[in-house]
Image 1 (cartoon, one colour):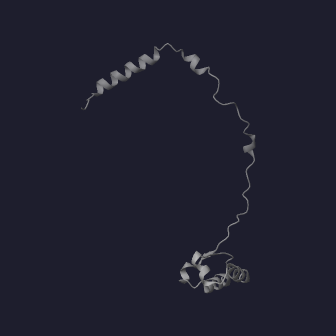
Image 2 (cartoon, one colour):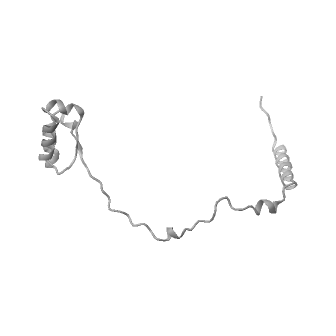
Image 3 (tube, rainbow, N blue to C red):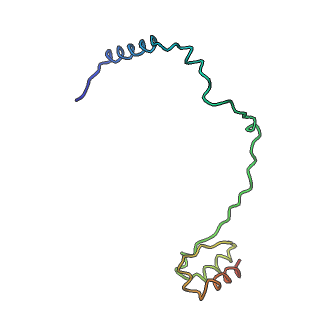
Length: 109
């Protein structure tokens, strides 16, 4: 069911609501005299700007684009100067042990 309200009816209704608020039993000064919700804060800490710290952003490369040739990927990435490489878990099957992989990574920094 749809209720239709004319403009005149809307204005009359809002006027009645406004008159009811104005004539309410709560005096306006009591609404304004309430204590603040939060205590005052010392904002002087924000007077000094914070200097930005140097960014420690380190870039690496993922070996996924070498199609499983992770040894070549490690050499190529190290030759480009990257200090990090993302290897997938299946890289361990290409090496005899995790220590062998670690030694190859250390060799190429």
